[in-house]
Amino acid sequence: ENVTIASSEVVNDKLLGGLLTTGFDEQSCLSRYQSVLYRKASSHFPSAYLLERLREHEALQKKCGPHTESYKKAIEQLKAGQGAKVMECNYLVWVAYSGLGNRILTMASAFLYAILTRRVLLVDSDKGTADLFCEPFPETSWLLPPKFPIKQFKNFSNGSPESYGNMLKNKAIRSNPAFLYLHMAHDYSDYDKLFFCEDNQQYLRNIPWLILKSDNYFVPSLFLIPAYQEELTRLFPQRDSVFHHLGRYLFHPSNVVWGMVTRYYDSYLARADERLGIQIRVFDPEPGPFQHVLDQVLACTLKENLLPAINSKQPIVSTRHSRLKSVLITSLNSGYYEKIRSMYWEHPTTNGEMISFHQPSHEEHQNSDKKMHNMKAWAEIYLLSLSDVMVTSAWSTFGYVAQGLSGLRPWLLFKPENRIAPDPPCRQVLSMEPCFHAPPFYDCKAKRGADTGKFVPYVSHCEDMSWGLKLV
Ligand code: GDP
Image (tube, rainbow, N blue to C red; front, side, top):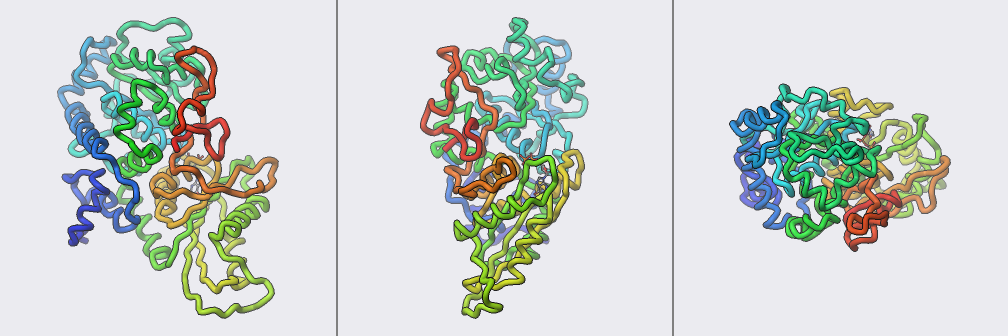
């Protein structure tokens, strides 16, 4: 099928306001230019400066990417164990770690850091990176070549002596190492967190290879580093759209995943007058389904008028209403979907609205190393992001990605404590940005603890996690 779109308006739009560039082979990644056919035009525009920097960054990725002379030179330096004084190309290696939502958020964070520090971003192909995503940069690859000389990089952890934090702790900082490991995962130490201080950024600038492992969206804390503030303001004059733009720039479903997205959408969701997405993520050692979660979802959707009430007294409510609302539910468990769907089959809605319910999969358990499992997860995140209205779950990066891509401010289901449905059950989020779950609480200048959610008005605490930070 020919995917070229005729109308010039759509042709302009398919580059998402200039976020994407032309010059890719369309067939090798259909989602890149077809997403515009499925997603409503965003009301958030990327700044001209962001577009300029993206084009510059693409040129850098091409100039220094795998198989180039610069890359070979940098690899030789790395093997020799010496950091050169002035390197033409410096690199940031992203390690595949944690669930898919976490991985997407960390790739976006790493990408922003790469833009700020003019580093080439290379991603570890573990956990199916190449099966899930298209190449984001033209005429090069972002996949780390398999012959990368630091063999143990995937096993680096908070205890590794190669980590920047441990080097600081052990006072083992050398002047020009060939590489450093940045441990930025949830279990990182106060020493690792010094990454977020300006002086430490100064030191990192001269290290040709940085290897990053994280499961966090650490962008909000980058906004608190004075050296980057001016640049970030120019890149993102509207600060709450960082992930919205970077996510739509970077993450294009592979053709296999795009087939899953479009087949599902076209079959079950396309004809609806309105699409409601409900993401049910339960952090409980038991699989459920749980009554309190069902109660909470219903309480939220009824209270916020996302779903009409049912009339349990009359068998039929006759109105001239003929609107169809399609509800996409995603969950590891099928119990919630089955109960809600039955409820709306057994009883009429009070306003006569027709509601259909759909859940693409119920995988029961997280299995982030399995290919088809990850593909389903990515297809479902993407399908959720095509909703007109969304309900997401507290603490879930899976939901954050869907909300960021969609550009919507969803209703967030608060996290239940002691298996009791919280009251209120949900609230609409302040911004579509993801929450940074493990931010540092440190004032780099004063060298003491501080509430980093109080430094500037646009970095505040999250709706779903009082110690988290998000851009608003
Ligand atoms: P988080 O744990 O909610 O922050 O999200 P992650 O995506 O990082 O990790 C959860 C993983 O569990 C996902 O990547 C999926 O592998 C799986 N998972 C959780 N919820 C769903 C769901 O609704 N649908 C599918 N297909 N997988 C899910």
